[in-house]
Length: 246
Image 1 (cartoon, rainbow, N blue to C red):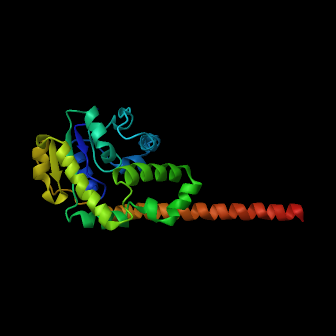
Image 2: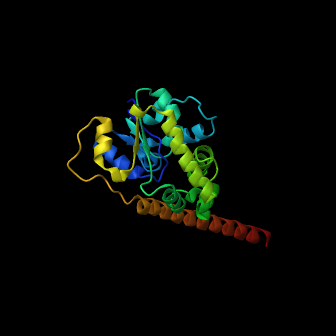
């Protein structure tokens, strides 16, 4: 498939609800959950790690991850929106913004998806599991390092980056190809932009913060299990050594 809509908005800007809305409108949509939760997409994390370790602007075979999709929102797609637009010049661009502004976006991000950087249990997974190592490396380099310029540790700098990025996208995309969108705007502007009819149902309002935090809790549980197994393994080895040397 060819991408018809490219989401440039950061994660935590209503992208989960927008993801659901686009699927409802008949545009199979890509989102971070397609990378880490969709078992059919085995190998996608390896692809995005390769992108993260390539110079910005590099050309890739985007069909390896987007073959079954016509839209993308959220990370990691938003990190390469310019490259995706170059590869899909007829696509439109959707810039999602947090309904309550840059400061609310920052608070939401720090409380959820920044767990790869500020939750020590994830560091355990990075040390002990291939998934942790790959996801941590991809996130650190592509999302937090490249797209967000390494400023998430400072609130004022991160807010400034969010606002500057918004203006960068607006300046780079012709107005007729760009929709600046908040999920609180509802169906009307999105459907008008896409040229489709509005569904006779409320716009999706997914409680994505709680959903993300549940995923984080599951990951933390996995870290404790891996840590426990590692400690048990060390104790077993020490016990064998003690027996052998005794």
